[in-house]
Length: 176
Image 1 (cartoon, rainbow, N blue to C red):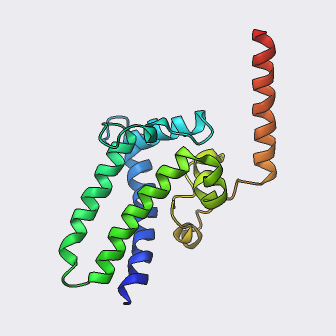
Image 2: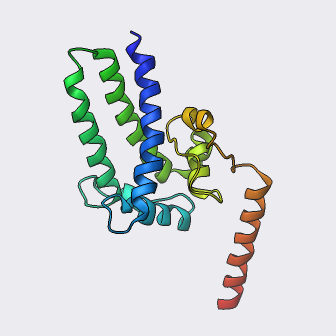
């Protein structure tokens, strides 16, 4: 049974490490397979107030959602041989991969839900520094590694929202 908490902690550590070093580290290079995350997913999220339309399409498309699902499936397949030796640990890692996908997808289809249930992930996309707040499911390793930077509900967010509203109003009156 110790495999369950160890699996949850390990999954969160992997989530933090992979997001920071692979999706952002390697992903900043446009020639990398992982560039979809930083260049496409982040751009869509910033432009559309956390929405990413890739998540409305089939998971079998070769887009950000499809590549994310493929990577999570490959990771899950890599865990399967551990079942005979550590069934609770392996089962928790598989659960964590499915949970990650579900929560990440929902956060980009329902930003209000994300603001309430995953504020650290909202902060990752909408905050001023997209190189913080690496965790999606729980912010445990962001706290442990000192990379949790709150944005939601701060004065900075309020100023940013007011500035964006002024820009939209200016653009609206300019075209009217």
